[in-house]
Image 1 (cartoon, rainbow, N blue to C red):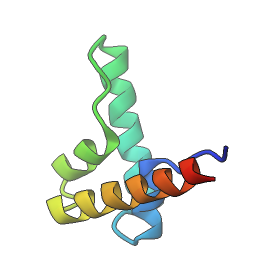
Image 2: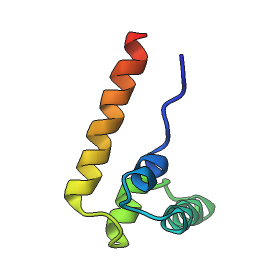
Image 3: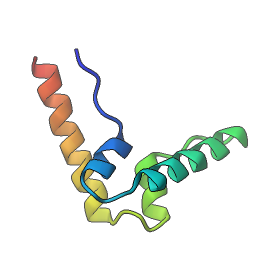
Image 4: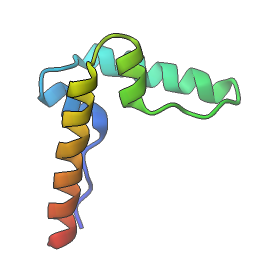
Length: 74
């Protein structure tokens, strides 16, 4: 089974986020982990930073689910 692309790759491919946006979001996730806190989802981090709208985040999640379903079917 092939591996599903990460959320950040979808966001960049859709043109909703830049590679730098995603790198900064991942850095934020890592800061939470270092502080002993749960790692927030990248989509939520990008939304809270104003990079993604709710609609864009949901669109990416729908596309990820469709890709997951296609991968599972093969």
